Image (cartoon, helix red, strand yellow):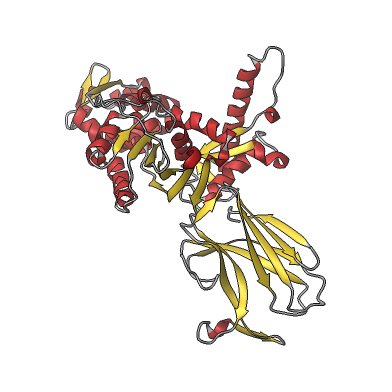
Length: 480
């Protein structure tokens, strides 16, 4: 979650509960290194004498769909530094979007693969034209993706990924706020910073309990009780607490108070869902996946809110759906045929100056006429369908007959029709030069620009048609 909704660069710092700071790239790299080493050790323990290495596999790393491209690029860099993949073998690492992975898995499940709380024997009836929303209910984020099934079983994204940071951790936060209110701010802060491992165990136990819709009971951690009893008897802390009780070493939480922990989270993504359903996309199903979807309170809420509009389904193993679907995606990334572009992407060009269209301050002149600088040439528009691994060709012409090189700067924005690259809300991403040594034909020269929209990266290649000089760049989304 430290990568969500932020300007990200390689020097981004994150802070632990104890106040210590470390580079996020280091923390995530070492976490991925541990997982890689653990996986290889497990495989080699059952390899019958053969030793597998990291390069024997294609690795799949799942990320939230609503993450910015910079966060996805950051994860690829961390995986590279962790030794999962080499720069020269980048195709050995596939980054999968979590709701897409879950979608791929769910569309092939039989009816007994879904939770059947209402004895309806419901299943996802997949045929060309079927449209459904995948709600990936994760710990940090709620990811919402809308898919249509195409001929051959491939998927088309109908609405760009949306969501918020109201995942299961928000419920955990409300539980912690409740304990903080009971035990006082200073006592809780002392406990949180002094015994983080014990607190982590407490939150794990709570994550299991929050799956039910009933009164629950959780053992009070030893060190929390020790700190608290130094000040007053434990019973005194709970006298004014609403729906929370002390019972001989355990903290009891009523069903009503447990439900209250979910209110902010459920309200947040219910609004997101309503906004999508208002668009009249003919949605037939809502698929609830992710660990947070194991919560009966969440499933009941979604069914009550939207059950009259769509069939609400949740796979029996809601969290495994993402992992298993990610493996299927890694073997066939083309299963998602097209996605919606999250931004308008473009490059800076100069056009013939037109006083009726262009700003006077953008005008410049040379022996070949009057020109307008900094014009935005759109390469793809926000919400436009972009095919998997699609390449688009654009032709550019020159503004100076003596020009021997050309610079391409790449930009993105959420605007649909920007006019200039220096408008508010437009971000510069990358730039590169293409050499054009042969000036014989003056202005009658062309540059071909190929833009390849890969799954998690965009590659631009420029070619001088006359000299065949080329240059390529992967668009860098990490801020400098």
